[in-house]
Length: 204
Image (cartoon, rainbow, N blue to C red; front, side, top):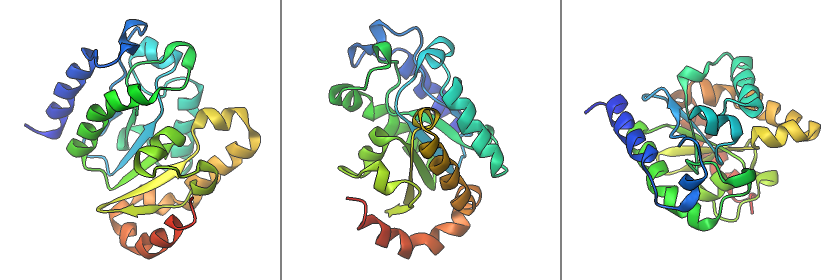
């Protein structure tokens, strides 16, 4: 089975998931969407109101900001894959619990295994901490980290950028300074390996 059909099959399982209680108050599950062969995967936190209504990730104001910054560096949403750590909206957009994150890990890990992205862009602290426990987003953002065959690129969550002009400027800058990595990951990954290893020491 090819990647597209594997992801479709996985999405069907996510739509039926009752591993935690979030499904009870959600309108739709939000499995994720994008290019099955994407070299870059964006991993956010959890669906919000608009995502819950449409069953699609990052379609509200935060999503529009993410799309605009992709376009700023000459990319389109259909070139990447976009998903969240949590697949159902937490009530009132509260933070996800560790139990909920743990329950959804199987889906996130399966998506990563199927797509095999070269770069995973973590949006916010919850997705960052999936890969780098205890790392602080204020220290880590914009600094690529080599983990095995992948590069983790931490960024602020676009919702945080909407609330703060300072974070918005940092969010935009992180796209700009990592343009080469986002647009041509396979060519850039070896170049950044040494620097990325050095960056990892300063994140905690």
